[in-house]
Length: 205
Image (cartoon, rainbow, N blue to C red; front, side, top):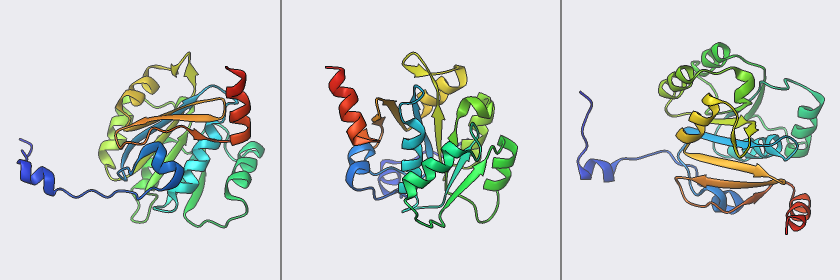
């Protein structure tokens, strides 16, 4: 039988949080370091750029791995890293080239391992729901950020939809702007490329 908590136990519990500020505070509040996030949107709208932007910001608080499952080490990923990091030699960031679930699990089991992992994308990882549940249950204090393609206005595929519903934070990307919804507050849209976002949304009026 699992433990039951009194009100005092609940109120006295401590959680490791990330002291976000600026646009990320406005977008998602001050989140716990752990759990699941999802970034999803149509192609060429900026979801990989937003995922990379988030990865860079997370390095202020922890070690981050970006598993480029879909593209691997490609020219477009190189350009995205160059735009995002602007020449910064960030030792808290690691790009993984198409690591499988087995390889990723082995990496995260090491004594010194990433605290947050961005998986781009869930469709190319070939993840099963049972594997996802095992992953987050085995590493409850690590943050997993899944990038997903869409089918209409929702993540593409049964597994991606179930992860989306399970996520603590999800960010829908459209027109170079992210629209966050989450459990920690915030929820103010975040621009990936401000000029392109402004141009896109002015055209929608």
